[in-house]
Image (cartoon, rainbow, N blue to C red; front, side, top):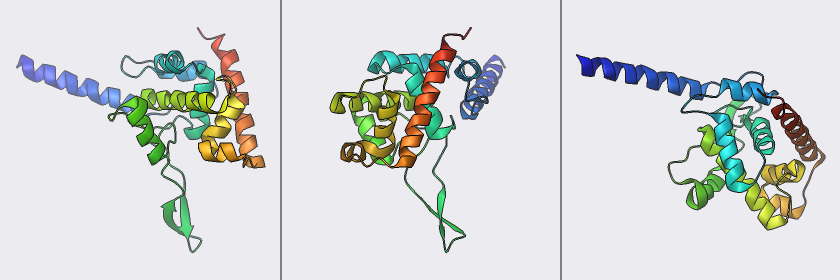
Length: 194
C-alpha cells in the first residue's frame, strides 16, 4: 500500500515537472519574469544560463537574447512549412528545432564535442549550453568578443560559412540589431532582479 502511494506521488510529480518544461514563459521581454517563471528544482533556467556562462564565458544576457530571438522560449519551435502550389503545407525550410533552433548537423557536432548524446534541443539547459558552445566557437574562430551580441548573432543565424563570407543582408543585420538590443535590455533588467 505504501509502495503504491509512493509510486503515485512520483508519477504525479513527474508529470508536473514535464508540464513545466513544456510551457513557454509569458513576458519574454522581461528576463526577471522569465527566470521567475522557470525556477523549479529540475528546470531552473537562470541556473542553466549561469552554468553556460561559466563554462563558455558568454554573458547570460547574450545567451538569453539569442534563445528569445530564435524560438521565443518555445521548447518545440520549428520553422514554418513551405507551401506547395501556394497553399498546401509542405516541407519545413530547415531542420531547426527547439529552444536554440539548432540544425540537425550542428546539433550532432555539439553532441560529439560538448553536449553528449543524451542532450536534447527541447531541453532548456541543453539548448542554452549549445548557444554558449556555438558563440564560444565563433569567438575563438573569428575573433568576435563574447559580449558582442550583434556579431555573435550574425554568425549564429548565418552559420559559420555564411558569416565568414560576409553575406549579411539588411534583414539579417536587423535581426542581429534586435538581438543586441534585447541583450542590452536583459542586462539592465538583470541588475534590478530580486
